[in-house]
Length: 178
Image (cartoon, rainbow, N blue to C red; front, side, top):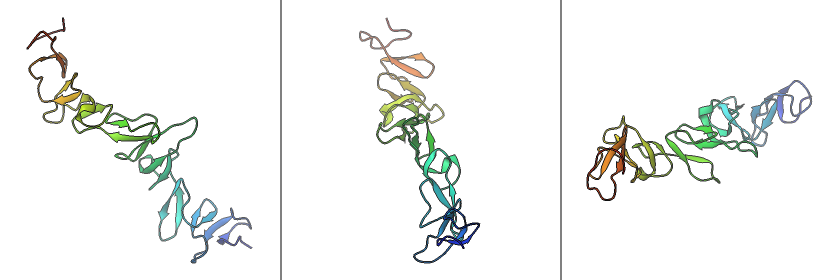
């Protein structure tokens, strides 16, 4: 005989199910030989009609599918801290370019301002580099920490696509700070 949660089975244990009983009070979702009231953590519903659960990608704590880009939250252990970026629904060891860490307790990567290629904080003043492919964001202003369309008066082009303030005694300048 099968365990009380199984409809069909290969043995008497609750881990021997091949399918689950369906009913109001019975566990209904099947995953890896067991029957559950709902898909357990680290799994998702792969077949709604058959009520079959599948495991998430190994980086996900919760997910909506089996790929690494289907995470809804990330696994975190004493030895592995993963950051979740909702834009890509992916878990990372460090927040990737285009995002920045929200804070150590939440382990969420937040999306940079649209003008930034890379950033270390929110808004256009959080930029550390600019997305030159976007109109009006060609140059990174090192003092303002934001992307601008042109190096303004009082700055000079110090590196490709980077504006740096002139020496404090100068109104305009070219070249290096001295």
